[in-house]
Image 1: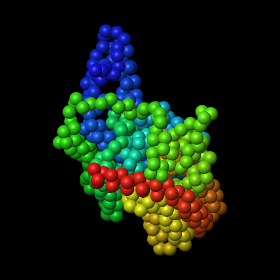
Image 2: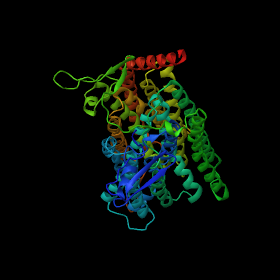
Image 3: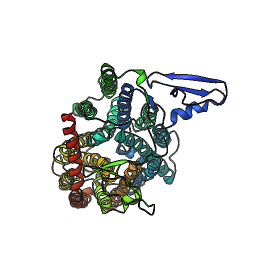
Image 4: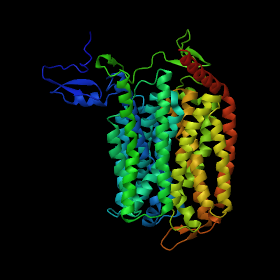
Length: 589
């Protein structure tokens, strides 16, 4: 019988064995070549020896750390919190400031690199790359805003903002790809929870900075640089691919645990919103607020411990039951469920792979040759592009409408974005299992609501910015949470990391079109120059035409989403039938 403890065979007689009780495995490595231990830890197959009990607990522990990563990876949406400091320090007009925000979003265009790396590098390595890049990108911005160094030339600031924006693509790719594969039978809740915490992260950063540092832009940038780096270093040790649920009982257990994650997330969101409404943001109260917030964010750690204890009680904790399971194994002949029938990928007589149909694994080129990919791509652009323009310009929109403190609108957009993400992920999964409802219909509904929100802000009705920030946040969140599982269901999981990052190109593209060009030019046309450079605009007319154009773009997105729902209705009917048949088979057994 093969000794499973000898993962690394030393080439000399000088070796040492390290035991990892949680992983239930040991590593033996050569003392004369110690970097082999590091390579083993960073390799995709680390932790392949485990009992079922530790496997389940490790999967949930990885998901908890994924939630923590997502809680701090929405720093790309916080530009409004320090854009005013950059504008005054660098004497920028609105077009130049908007182009800085575009440079930040252009960083997401290089997320293709993270997508390519997701099939070649392990999750810990991807997380480390993202955290180090963010530390450098936001660290330099802090040096400028804190006046530690003189403002850099405009093009250099664009580069560092681009690095900060790109850092989140590595974090998001590592988290989403790993967790979607680990919980592939509950993709909606996984996407909703993870994307929901991304939405909350803006409010988390904003409220913590307001509570502890009186909303100081320099202190805020310190948080953006240091906190993600520290959290990713923690996730490096626990977030990795684990075999997904293989039975209806395991799937049911996952559903119950995800319900707990949803409850905790809603409590965090309500807590953050309450802090904004109360308005007491100084003294002991602020320290207590920050402490309770950290406790709430840390509380999901109880779930992996509960899972481990349940597994032991079921008699699954026997070390002799260990099996060897490579995690990032090469995909050989992967079975794909289409039309409720297991179909194996085959090759033509000439040796060429058959062109896949929707629901099977697509390469990026195969996906891009389909009409459905481009319908999804353009509809995604209409939703996230316009939403991102509002988020990037929230500071100037608030000032134009007469508000002196716009941090509450940034926080509200984040919190309501969370509700859109988490509710749409859970509800879309529920109706998919119950009635086979195509997910793109949820995108269509959100786009209609978003168009209404833009019209309200264009008309500048009383409290329209409060209403608009909530509506845009919800709809933007729905769009992000629904598109993630939709792409995996239409084009498969094998190349999902790259396909997801191609879709994310809509963030820099939308930011450039709607924020850099549309909002920048139209705002400057209405603005009045100020002494010393820059300009300003006060009044509802500053953004009226911008909101009207974005409302039209949202209506176009509605039409595309309905078209995609019609074209994919059979796919979702088949997914529904497959889930229903599996549930019936489990009940019969």
